[in-house]
Image (tube, rainbow, N blue to C red; front, side):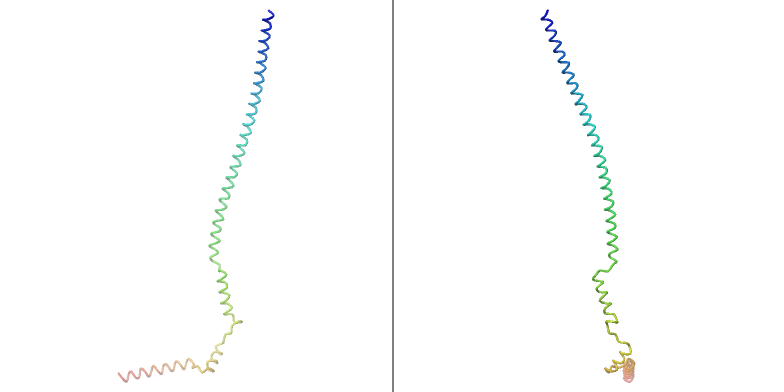
Length: 148
């Protein structure tokens, strides 16, 4: 019977060894399951965080898009208003005209000075020209009346 007892002991040892191995494997599986759960939680948290970040970025892009649209409208308004202003070339032209018409820099003559100058140069007065024209017209009409 000792041989049978040895076999039973061997079987018991093997069963105990298998039980120990099963417990070790179960422990490893629990540890792996816990790690998978932790990784799953981490992935879920990162996914939520990324989703929040993406939503924030989308909101920022929408805000920037609105600001750009407003800036485009402002630029159009500025360009429309800009057309109402004079250019530097036009301003230079106006300045030149003002310089030309400036009595301090230009020499203008009074009416009296013009009349005196005309008398000096021997020009005929307006009234004299008109009377000469009237006389000429009278002669022409008188000549036509005598011929006709």
